Amino acid sequence: MKERSFFYFRSIDESEYKNEYERKMIEDLKYKIINEGFKVQNFGTPLQLADLVVEDLKSLIEKDFPIKDSTSPIEQEYQSQIVFARSRSQIYVGGKSSFETLDNYLEVIFFFSYLFLQSKLIQ
Image 1 (cartoon, rainbow, N blue to C red):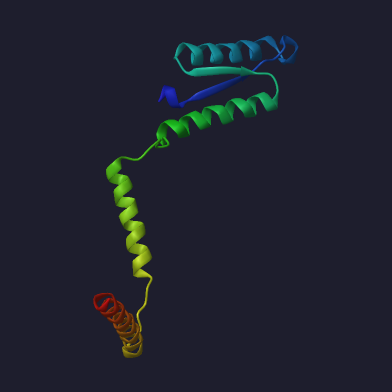
Image 2 (image 1 turned 45 degrees about the vertical axis):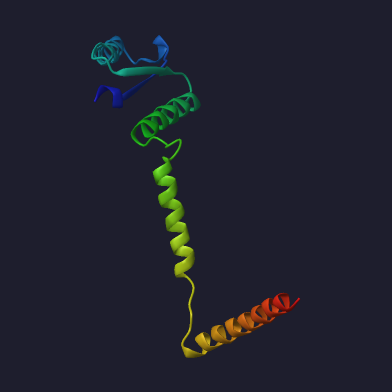
């Protein structure tokens, strides 16, 4: 709990206290917080406070949700298989007319391959 709690104390002049009682109460509270072991930081301006808060929140987020530097070879292979499968699952081969078109194309290819081989054998 203490490593996830932050206290920010504004630096104030003695003249800013309304009276001695208020100063003593605030100083006692600060003393208790420090003695409990909480992280305490002092700031002078609202911009300094904003910077401190952002820095502390970033460190907590990075600690709770670390960025993976690299993936294992198994994870890389898995990802490439997923990408490959997705790219192949987007293809649509229509009904009978699509198969007829493919068959005609293959017949032409085989026919010319056959002619080419025949010409090589005759030579």
